Length: 167
Length: 167
DNA sequence: AGAAAAATGAGAATCATTTTCATTATCAAC
DNA sequence: GTTGATAATGAAAATGATTCTCATTTTTCT
Image 1: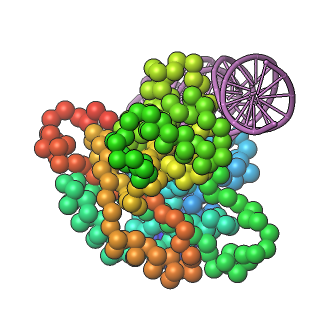
Image 2: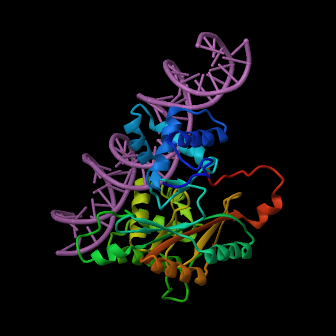
Image 3: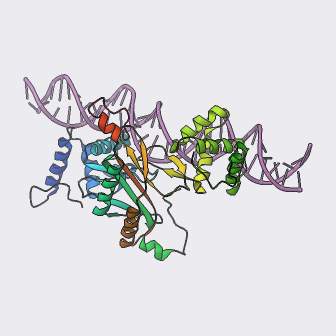
């Protein structure tokens, strides 16, 4: 579980957790609905780097009547308000993660699809310098590395990769 | 015009240019067709970083009967054979460029859409080191910077941006 | 020229995402 | 607590990029 914003009480009951989520929703100036609560709850407790479809399917277990339009809509709202950030890898569906983590980038295993995160200040500095040298004021960047993770390196020579990132 | 592969003759006539293109097509083991010639010609002489739609529209002027399936198909074939490489920026349509250029990355102006290229060996080295430290063997990467170009910085304070990269 | 194999184009299919719009839920004011 | 203006929802249609299907046409080899 990812600490979303600093907890106000030292004991996190389910109720206080709900209050947290409501606070986020109100913060962005929209109404609190069961669907929005469910979506936030899912992203909070589920795994990181989920797609809209994954959120939709997971939430549907708890609230079968939710529509995917609602999920897409709210994920968009959350990214617009910097609560979440979108990670777009190649032409694949967008994945979402909490935006209030430290800045970091991703490395994806081209064999098993596993995603690891890393931070590197040196690279950040270089990027700003490069942008400046071309006359640009840097506002954002995407750095996605692709490689073969240690597990898959060991497995190499066995069956062909089950997943291909780049079709 | 981008030098595609080293010219064999010192004077590039239209005919020898055609021969060049044919050679590329045959190299990848497919038949030479008017459509494929037109597509290659267009990419060779047109601007860099084109989308499949742009290639399709431009080629259609010369060869009105071409279908977009053919364009997409051949662009895919060319990227599969490393003649072209695909640049995917956010969720936008893929753009294509010659793969035999030196490796480089892109910086996109979020205001006017202008794309500049750069190379930085330091960043390449850091990427490999980071990947290794996480147990990955690096095979590929995407580095896309976003910022405001010098022209648009000057223009700031005027009209709102005509283009938005991220809708 | 003739035949086998590959390539084409039109349109349908797909996939992720967004929009539309009629119905339903929320919340601030009574 | 009821009410009502307003926003949110879900179903389905729309969109945009890309891929696939398949009947017809080209290419290339002989």
